[in-house]
Image (cartoon, rainbow, N blue to C red; front, side, top):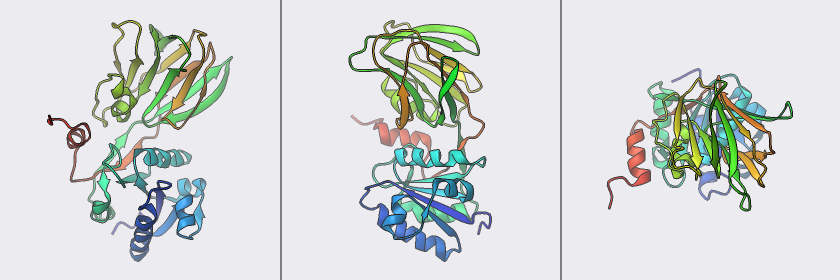
Length: 289
């Protein structure tokens, strides 16, 4: 038993066909173990239970179980922005294996039992704090698990982004955009833009230009403590900033995007049956013809 785990929150993917049944079984299991259950959003409605608000989950949860995929897990991590505690997240995939939701539904209860017995490995992943300054005023602030992406619209020409690291000029990127990612995000959008695969427990920040005008502008890996600034200096049409693919804003000429390592990490409950290299082989089909 792990007496410090008193409140367990369940966050499920909306519309997933087996999410409600999996949540119902999990609620019964947790209550049989003497744990209080917090049900977020639509899954509480489907099970006809009380809905726990984001604030309640952030303040009370000692563990969050995610039923869905990596996008659902990012949503759950966003809920936990409201707490100073590093609350572990157990990611259960309801479809194909995820890079973060690495526990198959069939293995949920063995892994949960191991976690409650204090036998699971917890893995810390860095987040990046993000803010956008416009005319001396902060117009957007948040954090990311995967990446912050500046991307041009369909009709925009190449954008110019003045890049600085720790106050020193790096370069002016002339590209379709740029991806600033964590090691966790190295296997997301950055990978499709020819960024490096980085072991997710490393402390680093990745800058990956999207279709750079110069072939000499390659991805750069920076230390995690680096402070990155990207200023949009061109005015060639629509340019958008997206945070973890879930939120963002249109950018204007002169806007400055600032990123630095967040004080609080994301904590994942590891599946003891699989490691990162096993995930790579499974997801990227390495070794297959």
